[in-house]
Amino acid sequence: MSVAAGLRRRGIDVTTAAAEELTGASDTDQLSFATQSGRVLVTQDADFLRLHQAGVVHAGIAYCRQGSISIGEMLRRLVPVHNLMTAEEMQTRVEYL
Image (cartoon, rainbow, N blue to C red; front, side):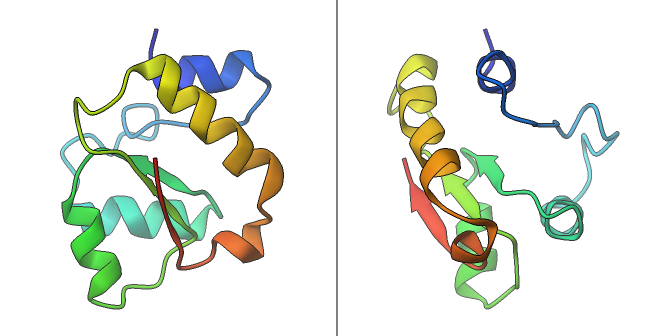
């Protein structure tokens, strides 16, 4: 099961880079799409942290270092972020999973 599928099963509206035909797009383009869509970007790519540190405005980033936790644990950590934080609170914020 993917993280996206697990979030959908929990009633959370998600999309993926593949579904939006952004596979292979630059990190900047992917983050821009997420921001314009008002979506938090969930990633295991540290390049997005560099964009955040450079001051790129975004709707929020949920970051998990690749291989550090299971998909199930990612879901256990993402669901409370979704349920407890508003879109305004996530603006330009990074949540480390």
